Length: 441
Image (cartoon, rainbow, N blue to C red; front, side, top):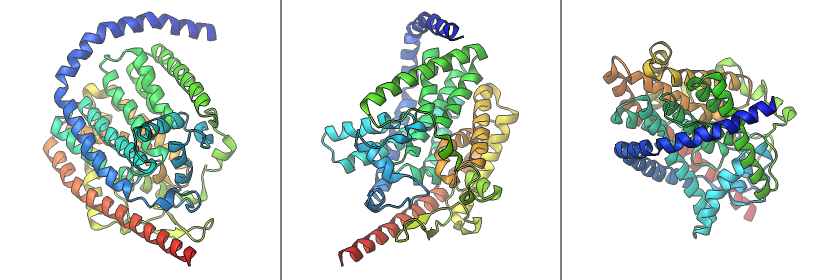
């Protein structure tokens, strides 16, 4: 079996080279034909990146201080991940579920430090660049589905002001990078369905999906399966796994404290049907609603570090949403449900990628129905599929109505989510200052 698999990989190599050579001219022609879209994507990345630089600068330093932070931010591991971006010898044991986090997060940060930036500015630069690239990639996905440029810009803006992006892109956590990598894989699917992506690039796309979170590999698997025969897809995915293993081996040499990407099942099963996750309604509400519009974030008691608080929206009722957030959420629901229905019933030429998006969202929904204690923590892994599915709403009758709904939703969601983010970070900073003052006295 192994000999046959290796033989198929070797047999693919000449075809891959031939395909790359034949498509070089086509790629150049695509660059010329896509120069307007590429220019728009560049402008989007700059504008969104600048906005997220500001948001990232509002995060209190106490939250990334290992001597002070107590897992305040929605169960995030800021005190573990922040050193990963700065120190090659940081404890990278979580590469057992985030396989390539060390090389992906450390390398660009170190490059900026070598270029002369301070550690603080380097981290801000990487986080804002990740947000900008994510938005530009999302724009490319909408264009890949066939949305007109204006529509693609509007839906990209919806993504950029969602609560998932607002609360996760500015913090040093793997979830921002996971959002970017899974979006890249899904956007590759919009190109794969046209048969224009060589097998080696499809393999790399599956590696990208897999790189930051093991379960996100499903995005790469489903897009490859949707756009290829099963035999060809199997060979592409085997190639991808081989590439990931080689990269991980190099990472293991450069980052000695990296663990192999095999989850510790005992520790992971501790999060299955967790008490803090609540019931089905709590999980569904957090999965579909609070990833788009954040309710008022309560400061809960922190039993581990009583001097701090704990942020969570897992049990927040919908009534705690401000009216602007609720209005934006209703408009989003109209667009999303319509897009979901059209992706199922009338996907048109986008049928392969629609199938992959639907199955991936179903997979993520089932996964986080059973796993995790704070559903919002994982939102960047599945919200890109929600946005791309929402894009189907303007690919049919009633385009103007759904486009106007999306346009109106943008300022409502932006005001709700950004104002709540600034309130939370301001209150956390005031709390950190009070603790510091008490300690000095």
